Figure 1 (cartoon, helix red, strand yellow):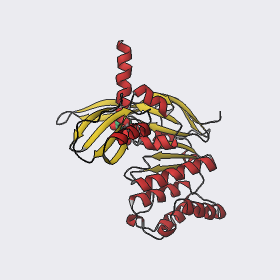
Figure 2 (cartoon, protein in one colour):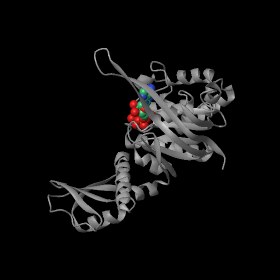
Figure 3 (tube, helix red, strand yellow):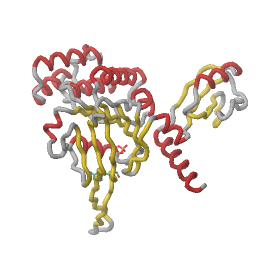
Figure 4 (tube, protein in one colour):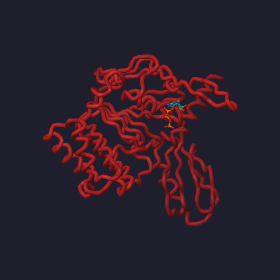
Length: 324
Ligand SMILES: Nc1ncnc2c1ncn2[C@@H]1O[C@H](COP(=O)(O)OP(=O)(O)OP(=O)(O)O)[C@@H](O)[C@H]1O
């Protein structure tokens, strides 16, 4: 296996000063990343998930060279990011869903022209990449629009193109679908899948949306309180966490709780709307068919468990096992 990203016992400790009185400050240490080790092969697409404050952004910042690890060994494409940040910059792309790297007041194309020069992208390659990304990300009508006038989904597609103009071998995506509607989410996910399949771009994806992971990543790593607590397939995470999905059903009228086949069960009823929990690893189609055959349905939807819930379940399960 060609390890493209390698972390061995990587740590990041922040010294934080906290105000404890009028003139008193107390120093304490935050271990944001606590002895993390993993490797990612070239061409892999990996989800990197965890609750708020788990240490995801700190890891990504160390991988890009913005932050220097307090300990351990870290290499991306054989490069030590914090020592050779500029050399590495030509080989990586970064997209932060909550922040744009584009120039707010300029038309999209002007940001791309600036990046062309900043990254010293050869002219022919720039033109070719711009053309391909414009087509794949459907940016044709947007190139002359100032970034501040773009919708969130349009801006995100613009940001993804910007991160890929210089043909990076690895792409770090931090919440790339946050706040997007379902159509925009689908466009972004389709594009990432195609990018990975055609160019073998290595992708590390941070998200709170489990569907991003489900649709894109064969492997998921879970970080909590700075430690890697799971590394494997998403299905395995559902099993470890015994997580549940929810089928939300709108009936024609108020009815007693639906008689669902166990382990599915009604967990909430509000007027004609009912919520049924069922194991995330089970098929929704079967449950939907059973309910539809016996009840007058108006509408239904399936809700995925959120990452916090999956991780919480994972801990309950572990604690239960430790006690038994
Ligand atoms: N520059 C900093 N100085 C001090 N503490 C920091 C700094 N950056 C992060 N931390 C702390 O390190 C921990 C990990 O933060 P980090 O931003 O990596 O989490 P995260 O998993 O990305 O969270 P979120 O999902 O909320 O973005 C938190 O306790 C945070 O407060």
